[in-house]
Image (tube, rainbow over all chains, first blue to last red; front, side, top):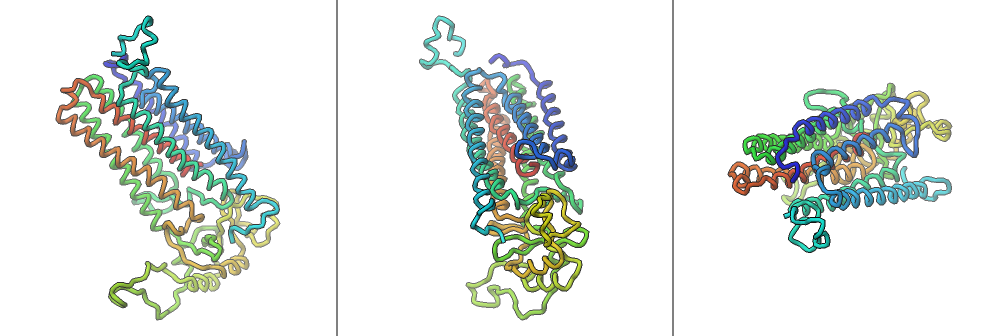
Amino acid sequence: MAHGHASNTKRIWNVFWILSVLTIVEVVLGIFKPAALHHSVLMGTSPLNWIFIILTIIKAYYIVWAFMHMEGEKASLRWSVVGTTVFLIIYIVVLFLIEADYVRNVLTGPGSISKWIF
Amino acid sequence: MGTTATSTAKEKIWDGGNEPLGASYGKLMMWFFILSDSLTFTGFLIAYGFMRYKFIDIWPIADEVFNHFPFIHGDNPMYFVALMTFILIFSSVTMVLAVDAGHQMKKNKVVTYMALTIAGGLFFIGSQAYEWTNFIKGTYGAVETKGGAILQFVDLEGNRLSLDQVAKPIPTERVENTRSRGLWFTEEAKRAPYTTQEVIEGLKANPNVLVRTEFIYRGTDEQKADTSLHPTLNKDKHKVVLTREASIERIQDAAYVVKGASHVRNEYGNKLFANLFFFITGFHGFHVSIGILLNIIIFINVLLGTYERRGSYEMVEKVGLYWHFVDLVWVFVFTFFYLV
């Protein structure tokens, strides 16, 4: 292996600080919930939620690429693991959230004949 | 072995005897296990997402549920779960440092970092036990209506009230059936701290108590026109508070007194919220436990010098992959259960 004997300690601690700062940003936003971000809507949910989701994906990238050392693997391995997972996850998330929204409309939307919370 | 493949022998890459993906068999299998396991967790989290979208008008607000911190009283949202996240990130760092030390064949460093990783894992599991304990015990208590809705109580400033502050004890002959009182093989399920009647009477007698429903106030025209909603206490993205008159009317539907959480009902709101919480954080906690166990096995092997003799610390790397995966899952659980 190319990285066999070189020490990556500096990189590891850098990633630790990046992950820590991202988590602190998330927690601070989660506690204070700035009104401008929390009470507005952007593409189906609040901008605050989008920030949380994007920060999470950045954190996931650093964990997989640096800690699990995906950056040192062959492109074929990267694609077969990450490509498959990301494709399937995006696919299932989109399908299920659309379906859930539809179910909610059936239950509570105009013309609904079911009384579901009382 | 991988170095035997040259450009002239390109067509032989998939004939065996080398490593086309540049990773050993064990590492490759760990990667594909992680792939399938991450799809399992995706399934669970998407079930959470589905139910949350379906019940988006009434889903419990995480900040109100997870607000405990050891030795500090009062409302402390987020702090504890942030601490848990840091513990897990830090144990991930010590794990990757152990892998790094393994590459350089530094046995003592591997031992130190593996020990720290195991300690981090145990800390995390302990924190999760604390989180579960508070969740199961509950804080304020609530009542459930005949239709399955959860009603909570607030005072005139909108602060939450516990059942102890609301209910008016009514003297009764009724005692709990225990094995010592009845037949030796019969006992009844643990009873709620108050009867439904005590809560209803308590609310009627105390003019400072209002009912808070599961619904989330979003300031829609429909909600603004609704006279049963309290005129001043309702805030955007908070639970709906009823007026005094509407509260008295609503409480008549009470069927159960709920304290804490179980698989059947919970004081926080929608039943699925507790079910999914138990299932997803439980399954993650199970993974952490397995990770600790694997780490301990590898740790003992490192101590015995197995990998020193083998000339490679790749086993540390493989178990490290699993451990980072557990951290990766937590990053997503943290976001979707506590932040979003």
